[in-house]
Amino acid sequence: LIQSGLRAERAFGRKLEQSPEVIGAWNVTGRTDFLLIVTVPSIEAYQRFADDVLASDENVRGFETLVSLREIVRFDPLR
Image (tube, rainbow, N blue to C red; front, side, top):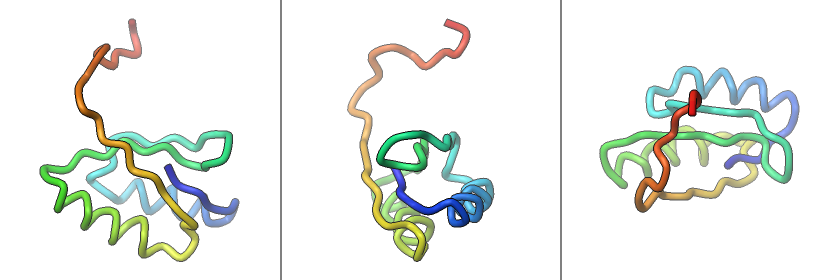
C-alpha cells in the first residue's frame, strides 16, 4: 500500500508498469493510493524491490507490506 499525491500517482503508475515484480496494481480510495500485488522469489528480492521502487521514490510517503501466509480462497474473478 502506497501513499502519494495526484501528479506523483501518474508517474508512480508508469513506474509500476515497468516493474516485472508487480503482477497487479490498483489505484484505490481511502488512506492509501495504491494496492500492489508483487511476486518475488525471496524476501531478499522483495527487500531490493522495496528499496529500489518504493523507498527510493521521493513521492512515496510510506508503504505497508503484507505477506500472505496461506491461500484461503483461490483468486478467481469469474467466481
